Length: 359
Ligand code: ATP
Image 1 (cartoon, rainbow, N blue to C red):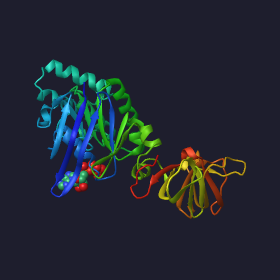
Image 2 (cartoon, rainbow, N blue to C red):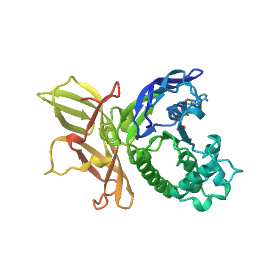
Image 3 (tube, rainbow, N blue to C red):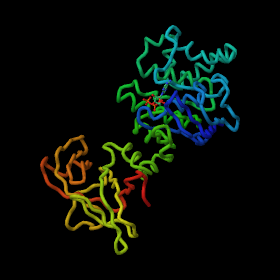
Image 4 (cartoon, rainbow, N blue to C red):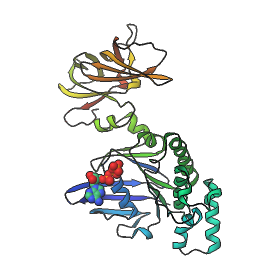
């Protein structure tokens, strides 16, 4: 079991409120990713769960037990740091054995657990080396191994892949996902990398300025962002966010801005300043025979970037910059003037004054 419950957790540093009033349940077996830009409070929140930092307000429970004031060592949680924090003068074997020696387990039991974990992470041939004799990827595995030997109730990880090169990052990401499935344990994982969040998480918490901006599955957060902040944070290129005005008339809503027009969902509303959100992959080149509903945008293509299988167009429109992702089979030249269209179900609407999703 490893259910973590946070109630009203906050932490201030002098006048800075790093984490504000966070209430959240991390279910047993979840792979929860804390995602957000630099300085949003991810590490501060993780360190409070780990017991490395005291909350200013609120309460933390592990499987129903209040652990808010319990010292880090007594929490049945294991932390993997970005820096790996291995002991440089100890061999891999002794690094792995360290947490078990602290627990005063017998020699044979320690050796058996170290061997088991080393074999499962495929680092058994490295047991007699020192950390400086390992590659970055191998060090990272040892750091995970040191968390694993303790068989904790939950694993807490702070950007554990950020020191790896792109190829190794992808490989290690997949290994961590497989490890999570195999162990069925609770993982709480800090990153600012949206690809890590989308691919590994069972649940994502998007943090903004110390508060929860959105909580949900990766699909919910990507497909139905609750705010302009979340919409602009996930996706590469990010969702197009265009200022426009909607006007309700005769049971439909028209949307307008310079170079932009369309009809959206049926309903009625007072005239309202909005932000329209459209993902680059949901734009297509308008074709006279195509569907008429939705939003169309007149653009000039500034840059065509070839990504191999597909291309990214960076365009200018009267309502702002627009990115479109499309197959390379579509031949488009820089300087071309086009009309792009998005179907109504792919247009997200946010109230401009609050930044919150409408509907
Ligand atoms: P990053 O992705 O850059 O690591 P983060 O989301 O993990 O960022 P935190 O490290 O939790 O952010 O920091 C949140 C806020 O708290 C920041 O404004 C930071 O400057 C501040 N902060 C963090 N630790 C301290 C500290 N020990 N003393 C003062 N301010 C701090």
